[in-house]
Amino acid sequence: MSDLKVTLIQSQLHWEDKEANLRMFDEKIDSITERTEVVFLPEMFSTGFSMKSAQLAETMDGTAVQWMKRKAAEKNIIITGSLIIEEHGEYLNRLIWMLPNGTYGTYDKRHLFGYAGENEHYTPGNKRLIAQVKGWKINLNICYDMRFPVWARNTIQADTNEAAYDLLVYVANWPERRKTAWTTLLQARAIENQCFAIGVNRVGNDGNNIYHSGETSLIDPMGEIIYRKSHDEDVFTYTLQRERLDEVRKNIPFLKDADAFTILPKG
Figure 1 (tube, rainbow, N blue to C red):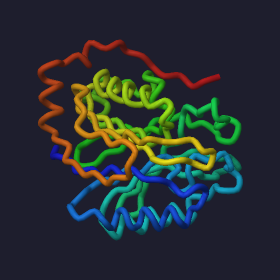
Figure 2 (tube, helix red, strand yellow; figure 1 turned 120 degrees about the horizontal axis):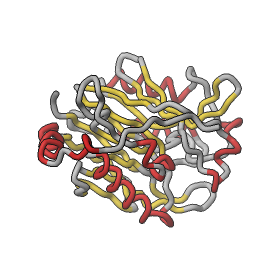
Figure 3 (cartoon, rainbow, N blue to C red; figure 1 turned 60 degrees about the horizontal axis):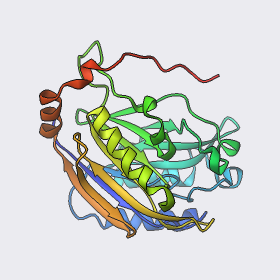
């Protein structure tokens, strides 16, 4: 298992303007001069965190999905972020893990943000997505999921005697007014799950005049802050070191002492 180069893009978003957002992210990805392997974009990166699901949704053959497919192939990278997707008559806040060859994985946001009425416009998912690249197992989540630690809980797998995942990711539109929760919980998730953790957030005001300060972050398995950016747009690339992860897990092997449990469907 080798090191993994990742790029985190913290950006303002053009409110409910898909074409403008895709042009912007096209330029930002083109601006990356060093080699990278996975590019992380914010939640609902093509629209902003809008409740106009019926008006803004696209299918899995839609414009933004096709853009992800084209850009991943062009740059020979993996691109991930969430979009508003319509499928079988339901609207989903769906994260897409797009590979350079056009194949993809999906994760539908499990915990919908009722405070903003997200649960009234979207259908929740019920399955985790743990993607794999270069031997790294990556647990992919969306924004509000961060408040629910059981959903992200890492475990030692009985068949392999290894952790279920190595990197925990949240793509988000998390407001500045609750940034203490964002920064604190992301560090907690890294520490308790003994993994690297990435939180990619947007900046600026959205269409509801809610300000986002970003605080896009990369945290190491001991909870140390490798990177955090406030207020400004930024494109940050970093090499995740497998040696660091293995060292922490070897020297403090507490995952093996964790409680065993099974997550049951709601309802």
